[in-house]
Structure formats: C-alpha cells, structure tokens
Amino acid sequence: MKHSKLTFAITALLLALNVAGCGQDPNDATSTSDAVRARKRPPAPTPTPTAGSVMFTTSTTFKGALATFGGGSAFTFGDAECQRRADAAGIAGHFSVVLCDSTSNAVDRLSGAITYPVVNVAGDLVEATNIFDGTALAAPLLQEDGAARTSSWSGCTSTGVLGRKTCRNWTYFLSSDRGVTSWGADAYWLGSSGLGSVCNSSMSLLCIQTGP
Picture 1: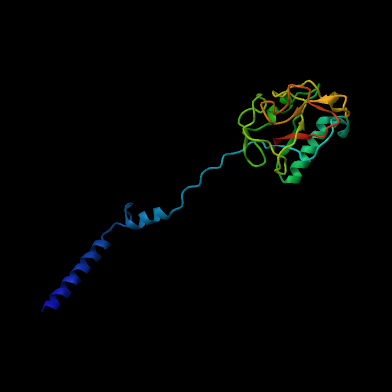
Picture 2: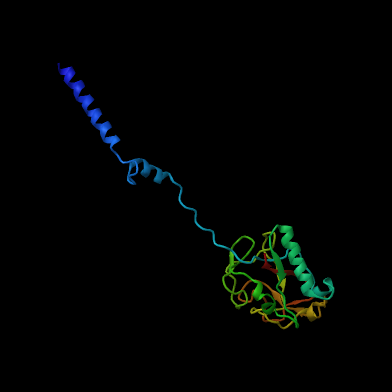
C-alpha cells in the first residue's frame, strides 16, 4: 500500500512538471532556450578604421641628380620609381614622389590628392590631418618592403615648400653641392632647415599614395 502511494505521488509530480514546461511561451524573449542562444551568439565585429593614403620610403637609393634619370624631370623619375616600388611590394594605388624644387612645392603638388589618415606600410598612423604641418609623424615611415627607412631626398622644408638646397634642381651629383634630406627623426621629418646632404650621397625617395 505504501509503495502504491509513493508511485502515485511521483507520477503526479512528473505530470505537473511536464504541464508546466508545455505552458511556456516559445515566443517569450526570456525563455531559457533563447537566453542560451543569446549567450552562444558571437559578438559583433569591431569596425576596422578606414585608412587613407599609404606613405613609404623606397628601398632603392640614388644620387642627387634625380632629373638626369627622368629625362630632365626629377618628378617624372620620382613618380615612376615610387610606383615601381609600390607595385613590386604589392601595395595597391597610384603613388607620387614627395619632392620640392624651384618650380614646384610638394604641398602645392600633392595636398589635394592625399587622403587622410596617412599610414605606413604596416598600417600604423603616420599623420591624421596634414603631413605638411611641420610636426613630427605619429609613427615611423618604413620602406615599401617593411624595413626601417633610410634617409631620403626631399628638397623641402617641414611644411612642404622649397628648402635651401636641391642639388641644383636635382641635376647635380657631386660633393660640391647639397640637397635637403629627410631624416624622419624629429619635426623636420620632411626636410631639414639646414643644407642637407652632399649630392653624391645615395638617398631613398619619399613616396605617398595619391590615387586608388
């Protein structure tokens, strides 16, 4: 008799539990199954900041007579070399040389074609708003292959205008004249306020993306 009463009680309890489960609204946002699914759902991805122009220095180096390599134009040669280096490294986009001479300032030639923020080839922020503002870069420039940069010809001051020396408009390659050089170590990253390096030195070029 006691056994029958125990069996009856267990059966009644199981029936009550089953009825309670069946009564749960499947559309209830607080249901156990939805809560479990919510915990298992992966978090939304964090948006990746959109980079603007890529800037690098070339792994190739040249003496100061840059114009003699480009049929009389240092800009023609520089633009072509920047593009060659970008293509060789698999960096997409159109690239131009950052250079000044007595006929052209880098700030005038390039400002309208640069997209910000400017980054190096590793994706590090180089400059958020203006590379010609005379301030130090936020991260070091790198070569197109990712190696540490070497010194570059620029002919410009830190604000992108003509500096004191340009190896005679980039036509001279002897040690008796000089061209302003970019060292990248301080606020004068684009060019020194001094006379720069002798024109028979071998220097890299500064390159920046100016188109897709």
